Length: 197
Image (cartoon, rainbow, N blue to C red; front, side, top):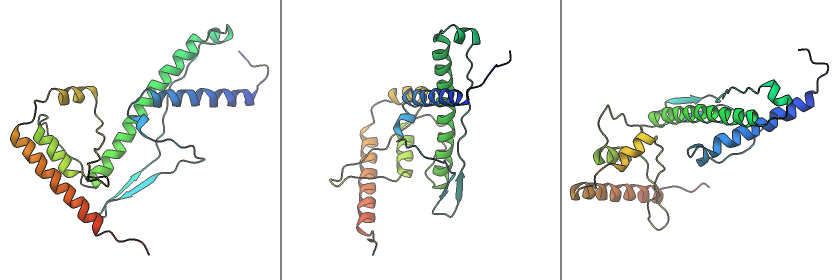
C-alpha cells in the first residue's frame, strides 16, 4: 500500500518514544543492568583499558539490535495490546544482548588485569570462592570495614551458592587470615599513596 503523504517528524517522535520506553524497561527488569548509573551523552565512544602488564584491551561500542513488529490492522484499529507486547519482547532482547556484551567486556578486562579465574570444571566450593576473592583487589572504608564486591551470577550459580554447606572451622580460619592480609595490603597501599602536587 502506498502512503499518500509522510510525516517524518511524527515518525521520529514515535521512534524516540518507543526507543526510550524499550530501553528503560530493558534496564529496570534486569538486576544486573540496574546496577550501572546512566547518563545521556551525545556520542558513545569505544574505551581502552591498559593493564599493569602493558596488555591493552579495546572495548568497542555495543550495538543492540531488536525486532519490533506491530500488526498494521491492530494499529489502525487503535488496539494497543500488540504495541505493548512488541515493546516487552524488544526489551527482553535488548536486556539479554546488552548484559551479555557488557559481561564479555568485563571478562576481557579482568583477564588482562589478572583477576579472572578459570575453575576448569571444578565444583563450586568454599576453597574456590576463597581463591576467587584472593585474586581480587579489596577495598575498606575509613573504619576498616570491608566493602564487599558485587557478585553477578545466573540463577543456576545462585542456587549452587545457596546449597553450599556452612564453612568448617579450618575454612573460616583460612578466610580470616586472608581478610587480615588483604586489609593490611589495603592500608599499606593507602599509607604509601602520594598526594598530587
